[in-house]
Image (cartoon, rainbow, N blue to C red; front, top):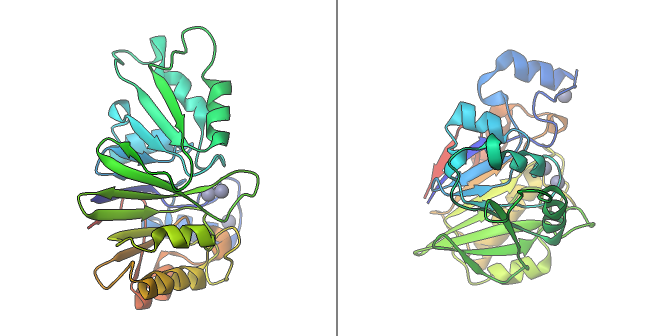
Length: 272
Ligand SMILES: [Zn+2]
Ligand SMILES: [Zn+2]
Ligand SMILES: [Zn+2]
């Protein structure tokens, strides 16, 4: 499995769109891996995680072949993960030669939002379709077995962590998860994970209720290892960083590398 990271920032990007803080100024000055767009990743060139407002930039900058993507897994409907208005450009005169269906998978809030956006004259579900998925009920998508598991995030909707399995390889992909709810730990009990991608929004600060910080990511790794879900061959990567966490890329590396956890950056590829 190959996971390509296109966006590795929290909601406002880093530098934040309107922010004047010293961490945004320093990120802009240093450039490189410190420049982070809104969260998005692609599995094996096929399965896209989230549809943030920076999706088009990822197509231009990173070679995301958006016209040919057919499956998108939405973690939750916060705007930095889900910008459905963009899908209006897959129709009619806006997109020539489209003869297949782009399907979005996610929770009921995603389905309700698409119901609102994909409506009216010519907005056929043969062009953009969606499927609401229930937690802990695996489904098949393009030859992968995909399970949605509950995260601890916005209590107003069911936010999802995705488990994707194919031919003995398993990816856990979470953003905005907090420490996992017990049902999610139970679901993971007999899984062997090859790649684990987790949010690390709050820097050194322990959080766990809505997001994770460095101590929470280390705790999730510890628990997965104690459960036998992860071992030394499992690759851990942290992503979804905020300027409010106040750790630039090299500082995140200093905090996480000693614990065997990699630090994602825009354009990074993780392979297992
Ligand atoms: Zn987010
Ligand atoms: Zn800032
Ligand atoms: Zn969120």
